[in-house]
Length: 437
Ligand code: GDP
Ligand code: IMO
Ligand code: MG
Image (cartoon, rainbow, N blue to C red; front, side, top):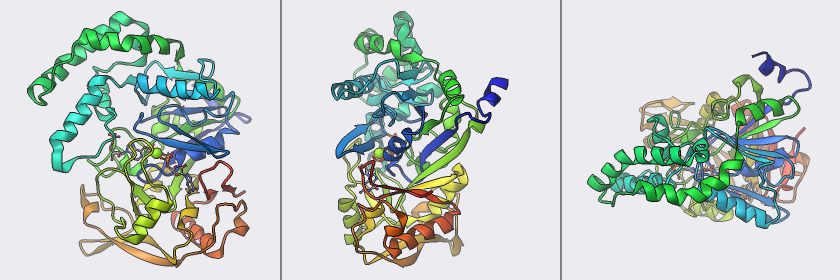
């Protein structure tokens, strides 16, 4: 306890959470990459390779699914926390791709918590089989086995990364987990049973390769905080949160800022800055309610100009106007200290821009989403219309140089959320950013 307090003593680093405030793909990767410059370590604390975080540096694009978005900065520690679900094959592929580009992915800087749960082939199979069974009411998952892996964690039959170090134990745990799975595969899903021995054998090479990366992420964070800042990189977004999102059209982890503590093993008090990443309009991949969704030419404009294709599955992202009701709820849940507003450049060229400032539902006006499950399907957005701007803003690096209408749009968001937009992103590249002091 005394040691943890010390990590917050004057001169010590801060825990900085960067999380998505909408339905994911807000541009978290870009913001984490940007902030890594002045931090010592970056930790992923939930989700898995359902995430696709894009970094663009000097025109070169890198998409990360599991590795923390600090990986392009030499010498910064990259940590995978206990709250993540890890597909070992995907991680190895990602490490190989980066190593070929000359990026250091050695155990000197990359550490995986021994407590991180592992996505197994049967999780991926189950994810697909469930979606098929849901037919017309699919969630539209990424098919990466995320939900089934978290289910096994909660059912206490999961495989943890620490098990990689003990092949015999690993084989026993796989056999135990497959008892129920095989019954499901053969009796319900009309799939062949998996042979536990074969599953263990197939996993052995990657498991062996990852053993040197295993460590105590929680303690590393604590030690690092004694000397510098640690970034906590969220995946997905608030409204995909398993509890607070648009259930059941959500992911299987908590995505709110508070999860940064539990998902990495640090005390909540160290999280002194929370950066909510907000896209200047709204997108969503997969099924589920989306009150401000646009179906006509404006939606198409945002989709194509914003390059709104999923970084993980390549699916087209649904697009719509900015929704302040969802953002207020997100702020209420995650308590941002500041906002990183992204993709402002995509709005250039629109004659007018709408912002949803409230919902009408069952004859009443709501400033926050009605809490009944499914209510979001039926709310009617109330819009305010603001003037747009023509100018291309992708080369602007100072707040004063933005067109007046763009500044007014940003100010309207700040006023509504009572939070400052400290970072404005006007293009995908690291340097296409306006930092406001
Ligand atoms: P994440 O999942 O939150 O990290 O976001 P994604 O990487 O899935 O999606 C964001 C997309 O927008 C990526 O293609 C980024 O390169 C891109 N992007 C990020 N910020 C900006 C911006 O300010 N303007 C434009 N035009 N693109 C951006
Ligand atoms: P990043 O970190 C956008 C969505 C899926 C689906 C739902 C459940 O890049 O912002 P899952 O595979 O998690 O069980 O799918 O969640 N989803 C995302 N949407 N960005 C993401 O991650 C997402 N991760 C999951 O499309 O609707
Ligand atoms: Mg993404």
